[in-house]
Structure formats: C-alpha cells, structure tokens
Image 1 (cartoon, rainbow, N blue to C red):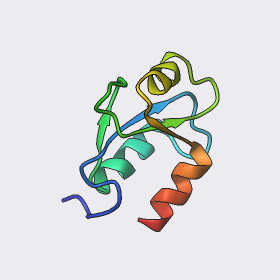
Image 2: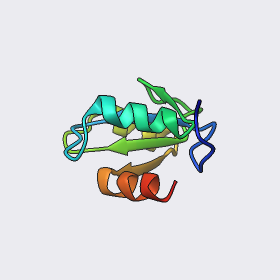
Image 3: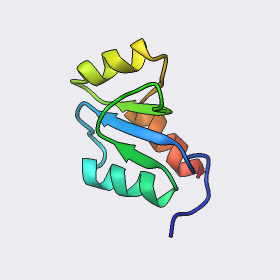
Image 4: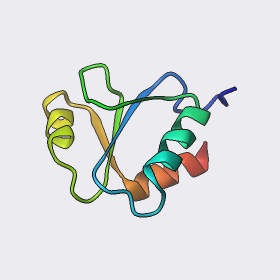
Length: 81
C-alpha cells in the first residue's frame, strides 16, 4: 500500500542516467510514495526527474511546461516525504 505524500496521485517520469539509485529503485520509491511512474511525458505528467544524458523526454517536459527536477532535487524531495 502506498504511503500518502507530496507525490500521491502525481505522474512521474525518469529520464537520463540516475547516479545515486537504480531506475528500479527510483520507480519503486515513487510508487511507494503514491506516484504513478510513466515511460513517456505528456501534458498530464506532473514531474520529470532528469539525470545526465536526458534527451527527448526532457525536451517533451519543456514543451508541456512540466516541472523538471535533478536527481539531487528528487532525493531531497523523497527524503522529506
């Protein structure tokens, strides 16, 4: 069962290389905190976590005015949750 947090009900997309955790760990953490993890960015995406090497998903996030966080900002957010 997901915990209630700032991420509850949000759609999150990961792009680029994550350096502090694996993609699987990041996805599991987001889902545990109540977020839905998607593989693509759309206007319905709430948050994009962009690591080094982020490509077209980062471009899509900018096109749809989606909030983009670095991996460090993501780690700070989940630490608070």
